[in-house]
Structure formats: C-alpha cells, structure tokens
Length: 427
Image (cartoon, rainbow, N blue to C red; front, side, top):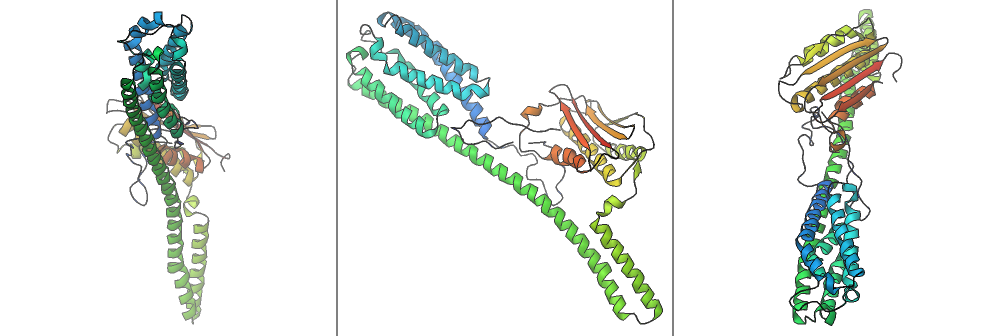
C-alpha cells in the first residue's frame, strides 16, 4: 500500500518529474500495467542524492586528511587572512558534509564550497607572508579536486565548465610566482592533471543528470499514456455495449417491425421497441447504477467473502450496522477499494504473522470501512511519484461515488485505510 510525493529541483538542474502512488496497482483492464513493479535504475532524485553523498565524503575526507598540512603552513601565511581563509574553507567542507543528510541544502553547500575555494586560490599571493619551503606545495592544491567537484555538482553545466577551466589556470599562475614556489614546468603538469581529473568529474555528472532526466521524462510519458489508455478503454467498453444494444435490440426491432403484417406481429414489434428503448436508456444512465441498492450488512458480507480468498488471513472485526441501504455503484466502489487495500497489505505489509483486519460500520447515515494491518508500514513522503494503484484503485474509485478515502501509515507502525460514504452527501 502506498501514496505520493518528491522534492523540488533547483533552477540550475534539469527539472524532476513530479512524482505518485502505490506498487500494487489493480490489474489493468486492457493488459498489464506498464508501471507494475517498475523501479527505474536511475532517477533525477537518486542521482542528486548520490552526488550529495559523494561530494560530502570527498570534502570531509580530504579536509580531515590534509588538515595537519594546512596547519603546518600557517606560520608562512598572513596571521589573519591565512587563518580565516583556511577556517572558512574548512567550514564549507563541513557544510557540504551536513548537506548529505539535508537534501535541500546540497546545491547551496556545493556552490558555497566551490566559490570559497576559488577565492582562497585567487588570493593566495596576498595570503603568503614569506615563501613556503621548497619541498611543499601551496595547501589549496590538495583541495583542487574538491572545489572542482563541488562546482560540477552545484553549478549549471556551462558555469561548471568555466570553473573547471579557470581553477587549473589560476593554480598554474600562482605556482609559477615566487610566493607560490616558482615551480615552473611542474606547475604546468600539476595544472594539466587537475584539469583532466576535474573535467572527467564534470562529464560524468552531466551525463548522469541527462540520463536521469531522460528516465524521468520517459516515466512521465508512460504515466500519461497509461492514464489516457484507461480513459480510451472505458470509452471503448461503453461503445461496444451500445453497439451490442443497437445490433441486438434496435436492428432486430426494426427488422421485425418491417416484416410485421399481422396484429400479433405488430404487438410483438411494439414490445421489442419498448425493450430497446429501455436498454438504450439504461446504457445512457450507466446501467450498474440502476441495480438495486444493498444494505450495509450485505456490503460487509461481500467484503468478507472477497478477503477470505486472500493468501494471508484478514479478520472481519465486529461493528454495529443498521438498515441503511447503499446504492449499488457505491457498494461496488467500497467493496473493490477494500479488497484492493487488503491485497496491498498481503503483498507489502509482511508475512502471515502480521495482523490484518477489515471493519465495516454504520454511523448514522455514514458507512465506514477500515482496512488495517500491523505490518511494516511506509513513509508517505518517500513513496515514488510513478505509482497509480492506491490513487486509481482506492482513492479515486471512492471519490468517484462521492466518498472519501484516507491513508495513514508510518514505517514500523502499520497502515490504515479509511473509506467512508454519507447518504445524501454524494455527488
């Protein structure tokens, strides 16, 4: 059993697909639901989460490993800006690490880290008070990869490309100055190495994002087409029904009337004409709605019979019922939704040891149906957007007849689905 939800995407990134409902969709009337059991290999959200975790590990890891070396160079740097710049960049690394757990902060943290690193690198000549020892490199070198990776993941592709080209160039210029160590050819080699590594990270990030965007777009298209196919199928079923009535009733009546010559034949043709008119009227008024109403007691018995055939036991709990009579369409919707909820529980809540129940109750002029279990439950906000089962098979089915459906669930706390319909209050 499940419902809907998914986070917004920042403006610099490809738009994410909105997302919706449950893995246990009812069988499609025209074939297999193309989304049943679908779990895309990559999505926009999963790629962004992966990027946030990777850059967090790199930032915190590199920051911790090279922190002693940075501290060792502080005596050669300006006592104020040298300490402040190292502290600010370290704080940005921690910010990136925290953002791995707070997804909405990820892009902001990545941009802050990339910009701070660029500022530290550009201002290095102003930071050095006396040349560092010949066997050492300026400490920003150790974090070039972190800064470029943060830019690749935080900026739009064109901005990240400019940043990836700019950082190695600035580093080479800094290293070739006396305050940067006057490295000469080795500075160029280090710059080329940094450019190649940063460029590879950028290419991978861009390709993964585009692949994820394509997956999301294809999934959104599948959802739209499937919903459209459902509507077309319903229209086709109605057309076939009307065609059958026209062929079996209207044409037969017209043929009989054309051949009627005796009073008995004319009377028979008249009766056939009345029957044909009744059939057409019933089809236009949605024939199932004209079925006799059923009592709440009969509805409960119908639900009990349906859930009794499931693979895991579902207990029918006692509850008071009165003499309220429910329209057949409403009874069909409530019974089908309750059965679908029970099927979802059997499939996803856990094994036979999980307690499952159904309660049908009448309170005044309102019918209440509750389907619940003590199983594993789920996080409503974490359910993928590309699920139609609960929305189509339960919520919309009950709403169509003027009822209401509420899904309540938490991980480890079970699930309850409450259906209700009030006589006189439906559309």
